[in-house]
Amino acid sequence: MKSLLGTLALWLLVQSNALAWEDSAAISELFHEQNIAGTFVLYDVQTQRLVGHAQERGEKRYVPASTFKIPHTLIGLTVGVVADVDQVLPYGGGKQAFASWERDMPLREAITLSNVPVYQGMARRIGLQRMSDTLALLDYGNGNIGTIVDRFWLDGPLEISAVEQARFLARLAADELPVPPEHQRSTREILLLEQGEGWKLYGKTGWQNAPDPGIGWWVGWVEKEGQIYSFALNIDMRSAEDAATRLELGRASLRALGIL
Image (tube, rainbow, N blue to C red; front, side):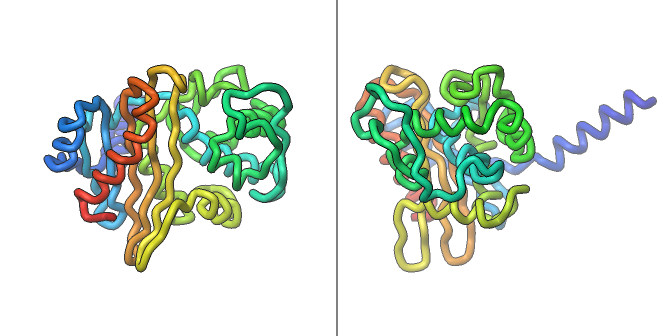
């Protein structure tokens, strides 16, 4: 009986977390026109529904790559290894993949340049236990960071789906994560990409296995007329040219839905 009740409770929990999915023919056409294998998920917080392309892929987990810099920033601020997003952090010295990474900088700049060594240094200062404990609070993907504290978001075992990304970002946008509100505000501030009359666009890219073929991400949210629309795109990265494709396809998808 206890086993049956436990199974029923789990089923009810899954059902309560399930969201209605609506396929978008317009977005699917965008992917097909460019012959891109991938998914786009939009989470409309007000209506509690998902709209997008390739639902099965949208629910499949992948390594988050540099999109992990979003929760990573929250964790660094929350455990106190960095005082604020303007504190200058060391990159560690030595030759890096990009010359722009070869200097110390604050998180405000490091997240824009996607500076891996700066965030790796912060991860080592956070440590495995605090990283794991705080990530569990955030309910981010599979929550598995393994045993290598400065590589788990680049190589795995941490994985997250596009649907999970969108739902996580909706909570960040609405100030609903279980970490101090001031840290959520600071993280939102450094993710702002652009704004216009009545709207703001926030986002972060990621590329697993860059610059070689892998999975490319663009995740974020739009605040428009008092509403929150979070989104997540991932595609198969075939070459360096696909770095721009992530943004172009993501923006086109948002326009197709009337969000931008």
